[in-house]
Length: 450
Image 1 (cartoon, rainbow, N blue to C red):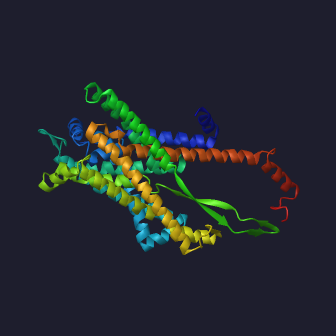
Image 2 (spheres, rainbow, N blue to C red):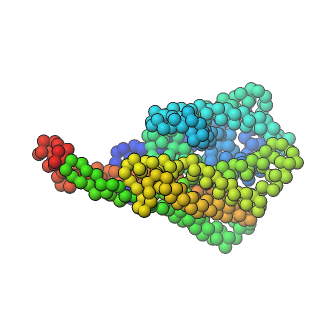
């Protein structure tokens, strides 16, 4: 670890990217504690303590506690993520957006601009409904909103939308000038920031005698097994061997090289659990605002930990895993690209048979990945319901935390490897230096036979 930190610090570009990312995270965490006006925060905190198993608990975890603080960043990065997912879906179904997607960087920039506009629309709608919902919240005889009315609604919508746009800008800047995916790192930072509160809650349960030493030990062992399983599966790949035809350049004949096409076990990432949790917690969230018999029945039936909740949760995770994988990975496009580049899979004909073979393998891998996601998310839910374990130790939070950490570490290692190969190329003692010196003596021609 000390060597890795030393290598990061010695590489100027990587050092600037890491420091920039940490600086942007610091700005985001400071914004969490900038309060939005018009709210009695004491009453709001008491109300949120009663809503830990609804959509508010999940959203509060993703926002790093901004919802309970009711800060200007209360919407966090979620409107931008929602808009990005919607644009990805539309890019597969809408012909005009699909043409933009195929135009290269110019088209992708246009889609990114549409995503920003959609983020603003989603933030305005969400903030307005949050303002209306806050006006209906009461804790005993105390109203959460100090002065309800259209003035409070307009002020809340403007404040929350501006905060969501600023967080979106932070995420884009972190992606472009920092290290890792900005939106994912912001969510991960929120989860990490909430873990001390979860640990304190766990310690409180131990002091009250609601958890004994054996249960705590089993919990820690279970968390270790879950983290190990996440790392093992997220790193898992099925490598399809690829061969390329011989190439002739000048008088040199290059033999066909053998490469691999890596297929991840979990191509969909953390999207299926997030979507499934949002859908299942929707009845409980609506029941908090409206005292309807149907909503109360649905809220009780789909309470986390009950058999109907767990069964429906597993089915939704499997469905979204296949659905999102189909959007992210198109076997026909991969087969066409291989055919254009002169690559082929041994014993499989190029074209349709290659696409069918890749689709068959991807379906089997996605089935295993979907079962893995369901197990990771459902087993901690059982712990939450049976042992009252803090929500931050749930499977969804651990899955996001470990997955994003692996992706970020992978990018750091890739940049360090680039530095290593660059140093080999610039060394006059290495093979790269000798080749350059020989080319210089030959008058700068690109090849010995050129």
